Image (cartoon, rainbow, N blue to C red; front, side):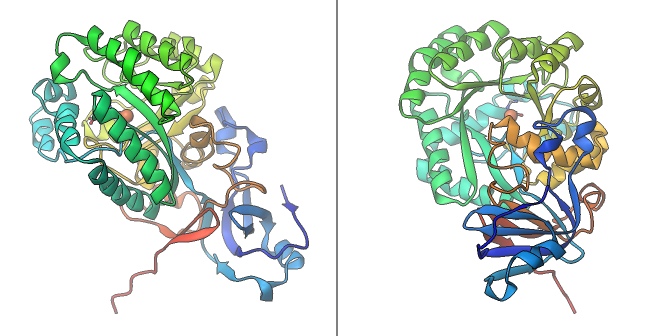
Length: 432
Ligand code: NIG
Ligand code: FE
């Protein structure tokens, strides 16, 4: 566990952490089954950082014997605090304009997600607004969202296009995502989701829209290196299994890695397709059948669970996380931030995962860090606090990791360190 580089003066150290959660990858990467509860905890923990990397992780007493304190520029005292890896949010949709707060009352009246979509609301309402928006406006919106995400402890995200649904607007959306990666300290990884819905001009002509995606959009996205992954909303009434397969096979041919939104509203056998296509990660899985889940478990395909979405849709059932863990499936957590489910907070998602999917706090934290890093294939650099990894570190006003799921509704962050720099520093509020 303890490794170090001598004769170096760190730029920053964190010391005296009540609990330092390393998420040490020796316990598995991704973690499955019981290893999801192995957090690699160091009490009275310390970390040393040089440039953007971690150079020491271990006990404070040990760190003090290695480095000369007077020479270190930034010393953070984390007495009584919890230190974890920065959260990784591996499934979001932050490139959009407008909002959909009006849909809450429709949901309260009992309208379903697909009924709202069929009535021209839902994704299609956001498509109209996003098509009208300039790239600059999408970047401006995205920067505000990234600031908020980071204030809650998220240091890397994946985000998708999917509210453009034309060659021009999808490219605009992906260029905005790329711009966000340059303009913000958050690492932003892009996914092409041209197959998010069938746009109005292709109503009743889904196959023709699929042709546009495979013959024009994917080649352009690949040629301009605008995305690393390709996703499809595979759902009854949206894109079928056959259409999803066609799109993702073309994407793979062009070097984009496959992901799928599966079995969110109905079981379309999406989990089996994910296994067949060796998808890197899958989202939702509320209705997936046993055979499909087992096929995914066998291939160790990551199920990214998005409990914010059934919460916002007021559904009774959440994804069967306990069964997935029992089957040995690697699971991750994400916000799914989109205009239907607008939360920037992975802390909120951890709470929902524990209370509605019965994850233990340790499992939820694993799913929000190291397993989430695996979902976007970044486990070599982020997701755990280990020597050689990026110094993406959260410091919480909480004595232990259980507090993340226990004290809910606020923001427990004290400091967020991204690439070795303090990017969020929340002073406690005193009103007297
Ligand atoms: O993952 N289900 C498909 N896509 C998004 C929702 C998009 C929207 O409603 O705007 C999701 O939940
Ligand atoms: Fe999604």
